[in-house]
Length: 73
Image (cartoon, rainbow, N blue to C red):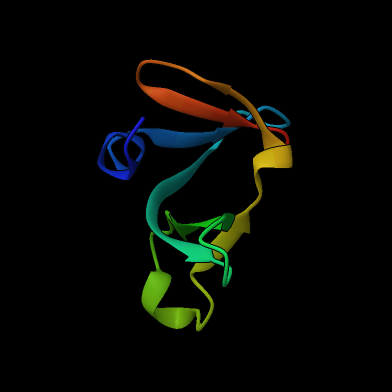
């Protein structure tokens, strides 16, 4: 699966069912391995908050579906 395909999917929390946002970037180590996905949070008043990104590791991903990525956060 390519990053572009992942970026089109909504990230949804299995804990409370809310949409967390979409993948906007990835952090990669010196060996080229993905450390975590950077998700831009969905907030109505995002401009009031200085931190609008969440980092998600592959350990948090429960399932990658056709339209959403379920995470256990």
